[in-house]
Length: 177
Length: 176
Image (cartoon, rainbow over all chains, first blue to last red; front, side, top):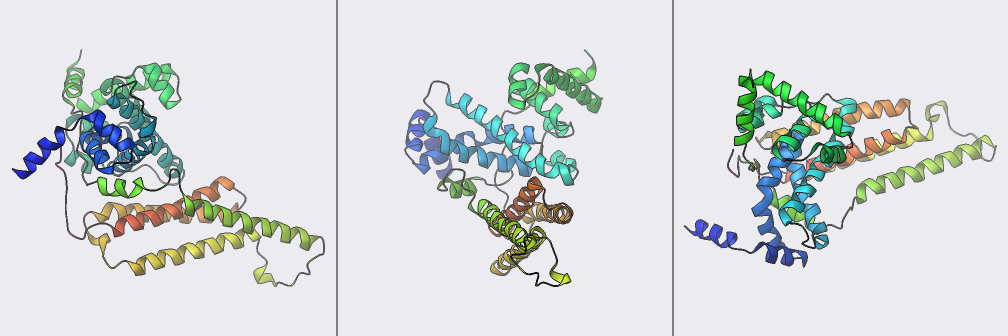
């Protein structure tokens, strides 16, 4: 019951007030923002990176970056939209950092079995896609980005993004068959 | 539209917008909030040390070839200054790792939570060793140097993370 009250108390926080307090260095307010948004950010990071450990690192980096950049948030856009863009960029950066190191020496290892145990339906099969196809698919089909926007984020042509999306669709259909 | 494409559309429609992380992430975030932005002191300190040693090596070689310094060393020490630096940094890193192992009293590697981290450290070490071997053959590859120093830094960070893990199995957050 106490826990329920606590949750109710937390949910009654006004987000703009929390953002203002966090901007002034209030860590308790920032924790509330974390509690409200971390699951959404983690989902995005997990789907983009395709790996639990990397998604956890990326989620942590997202919130550290958010803390540092929060004073730059002027409220012109919705906070969730701003955080979403920040999270996508952070997840892509984490993946890039990881890839530039591992791809030289170690073949990518994804524990598909572990992911299949822990996650449901679409997330079980997304991790089986090649990296670029997966990212494009997640951003286009799940997050509603346009191919032009994906192209800019990933540094590829919109046509390449479309091709990767169709490739992902085809591979997923094959997996589901 | 084929059956599999129908099924895919259904999966997309019912995919949850949120997922719960398998472990608690806030405590690590909180620790990093007070750190200055972009601070990577150890990494840059190592690069600075490597640069100073490299510069000393180049100057020393130049002076020796001009006859300023008499060749005193034997065939055994007849190694490139870069290789000497490489070996010194490796030794320093190994000492740091040994110190870390001595300082922690908890066998986190044996816990369920510690296993993925331990696996990551193992892979990191293997990769670092491969980079080291490559560097001994091509010691002038700056990018490889940075990569090697990065692997060492990351190994230390992972070991430090491992030491913060609980010994008992404590899953937090619901699984989706």
